[in-house]
Length: 141
Image (cartoon, rainbow, N blue to C red; front, side, top):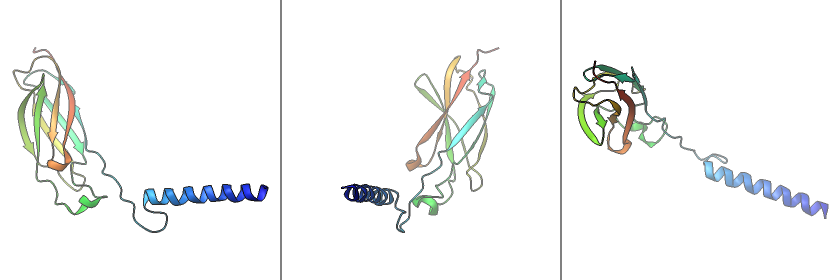
């Protein structure tokens, strides 16, 4: 009976390894695709009054280099839009730089922006979606 239990346990472990290999695609050859690093950006300062300047620094605004999109051409532009209280205002269009898709851009807080929470939306090519970067509008001086 002990022999049967050890064979059963060994069979369960082997089956688990095979299934794990199938799920990852890599146990017996095959290739497991990675996933994209999500674009990221941060504002500096994160709070500004209407008419003030916020600098955005980001990276990974580029096609994936570790999935099927690695052969896509570099992005020629991304659009930046001000989003506040359900309203959107176009800000600018800029071009990500280098292989990491770095983003360096200054935006001006709309002069009619009310104090409170807002975001700068970076709109990427169709299949990649958009990224909202939270900012705060300070009261006008």
